[in-house]
Image (cartoon, rainbow, N blue to C red):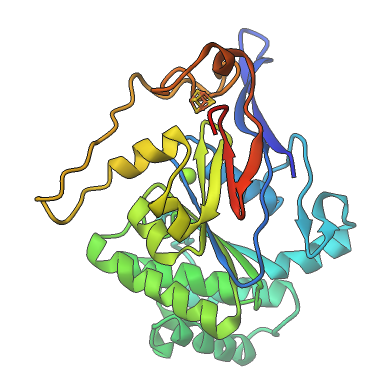
Length: 314
Ligand code: SF4
Ligand code: MG
C-alpha cells in the first residue's frame, strides 16, 4: 500500500546524499492467495526493487506491506524470522546466486538447519533429496557443486532452495531471463506444477511479455517506478487501456506474418528515475500527452471491475 523505495545518490568530496533514485514511487496492489501476479516492465522500472521490498530484503522508504492482514514492517524480530520461512525468492541469475563452494545439500539445506527444521547430516540430506527431486533433479546430485550443472539445472536448485522451508509465497525475479529459450518453458512449467502441488502464490517478475502471459493470472505493468495498469491476463491482452501497455503489446511479434498490426513506436528514452518527469511519469513519451498530464499525477484507479489504470484519458 503506497509503497515507496528511494536509493540515495552519494556524491562530491564528502560523499553526501545529493539526490535520490526514486525506484518505486507510491504503488499499491494486492496479491491473492494461490494466484500468480505477473509484473512486467522494461529494465530499471522498479519491478525487482518492488519484489525485494515487499519481502523486506530492502528497507522501504515509505508505505506498508500486509501479509495475511499483518503489516510486516512493524513485526518483532521473532515474528519476522517466522515470516521468512513463508516468503521466499528465486533470483534471476542461477550462475551468481548459488555459492560455488557449497554442495547442493548445503545450498538447499542451509535454511533448514538455520530455522531448526532439520538437524545436520542424514536428516538434512534426506529432506534436500526430496526437494530437489520435486524440482526434477535426481537425488544423487546433492553432493555436487553448482559448476557441475547446466543453467536450467542450476535454476532448479535455486527453486529447490526457495522451497526448502515450505513457503506460501515466492517472488520469482526474472527466473528464466538468463536461460536459453528452449529451457525457459521447462522451468516455467516446473514452477506451475509446483504451484498446483504446494498451493503456492507467486509474484512473477519479467521484462518478457510472452513469459508473463504464459504463467500469470493477473498482470501489472510498471513504468519508471509506477504501476500504470493492472488487470487479469485476458483483459490486458484483449483491451489494454494505458498508452504504455498498448505500446508494449504492439511490440510483441505476431507469428502470422499476414496479420498486420500497427506497432506503436515510443519517442525518446526512458527518463532517469533520479529526475523523473512531473505529472504523469510517462508524459515525455506518451502519444496522447496533454497539458494536464505534465502537471497532475494520474490516480491509479479501478475503471472497470478488476481493471486498474493510471491515466487522465481513461
Ligand atoms: Fe499519456 Fe497523459 Fe495518460 Fe500519462 S496521463 S499516459 S501522459 S495520456
Ligand atoms: Mg530486475
